[in-house]
Image (cartoon, rainbow, N blue to C red; front, side, top):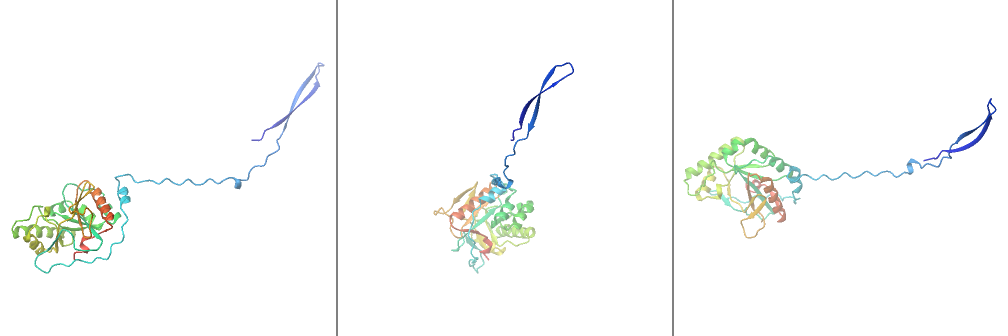
Amino acid sequence: MATLLAVLTLTSCTVGSGHTIHAREITAIPPTPSAQPALSALPTPSASPSPTVKPTPGSLAWYVSQVPTFPQAPPPQPVPLPTTGAAQFWHRLPTDQRVAFITIDDGGLARPPDVADFVWQAHIPVTMFLNSPAAQEHTDYFRQIQVAGGVVENHTINHTSLAGRSYDYQKHEICGAADRLETLFGKRATLFRPPFGNHDATTLRAAHDCGAKAVLHWTETVHEGKVRYQTPEKVVQPGDILLMHFRPALMDDLLAALKAIHRAGLTPALLEDYVR
């Protein structure tokens, strides 16, 4: 800051009484201006980078951010189907293409609200095996997942074990569910999963007569974010079918399945594209 200079001058004058009064006069001398830096010479403040906002763990954005990047799935080569009067049964689809399949059974325990958005945003191919009464009670919920890319398939009416039951009983359970699911979702189920995986030759025949091309088991289960392998390899193999349920931790189960598939060098694919 410039400093103001002053000069003190002593003067005198005589007043009427003969007294002389000395007075001080202060003269201000403006300072010599110093050179001011041009504005253009001043450093331009750099914009501070915006801090990266990380999604809150447990939020939909967080789950989507955790999904691995997969290689593109190869064009599907559907597996051959029998021409007999019985549906084919598989634990694992007989394919050497590097794909695996995610399936969700209706456990009737929970309807996690973000599942449809997760399936949509993360492009997760899922097949839902539904009991028809639960499907009717929660139609809107399952339709949202269907719109997001999920496919509805058959899991009987009453979720009872079919093995050892009569043909008429099994056909009623399978066909009755298929009829109702078709009414609710506009598509006839072409795949069937027997409750608990229990089935016999009668099950395969009844499923075929109700329009199912294949009866499917599984090779891994996923629960509370952990993959449990049903085979000694302890790794997802091409053609494997992963099973989970509509339970409170379904978002964690989906993410765990995706990570297990990725670790194995595979890509998740839609089951229906391989069973035509």
